[in-house]
Image 1: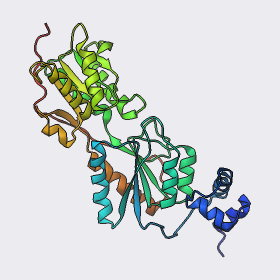
Image 2: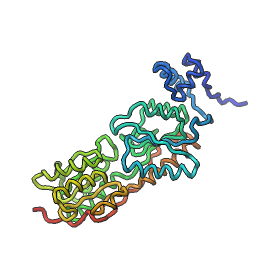
Image 3: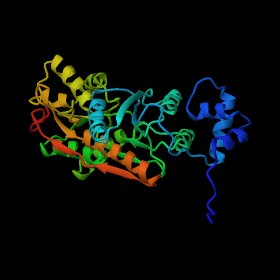
Image 4: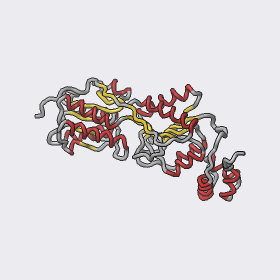
Length: 338
């Protein structure tokens, strides 16, 4: 005799929400022709009854959905990693743009509900409790790459060792004799940006070098932030002899601002970036940077999605892949400060 309680059917959910089975099905599949009040009732019933979709055919075939807050050159590298694993398994990849770093609109989850992918990989993001419940009732596992904030214990995450990267970048410059090192930061809302700045601070502390707070300038990982950062740093009474740009895009913005002023890299000022995007090696001079293994991170996230599909939810999955220093032509021994 099997004493295991049976899973609630969609008919049971519909009855609990006082709607028809077809209406409950529309909510389950993310259809738009349902009122907000009805949708909320059905979602509450799905959650309270512990409904979980199992074994239903996917309306758009087998997909892995990658949700970006916004696109950039790093997105291409991440997609290469997802594609490599997905293609081996005969799975397609679909991309959704969710919004900005600081605000995630509600609409992306509705698109995911309609497509019913095998899993969702979110980049530079987080998930609300409501969104997690929606994905779980549809049996859609999810993984966050570089979460925006401190992730909950039940949120699987994959990223790189950003504190180590910030430490390595700054230590490299200190070992070249630089003691006045400017840094152009990332968005303070992002965990990875805060970790890179913490690594920068720790390298100074380990070398017993005091940090002038004016050398730490705000940024958002963009080219324009690199330009603005250089303007701010060169306006100081004593300019830095080196700049740690906390993304390669910021480093390239710094290049443009420095070169437009006739400042030679690295003869007059050293520059180090972060990411090791393909453009870093093609820059002139070739950019010294911290490599974070973007393709490997995305491949690991995709494999984890497939593992979660097979094994079900697993708590406390937090993976950090190593970062490495890539020395090229944009850093050199410090010249005496005049």
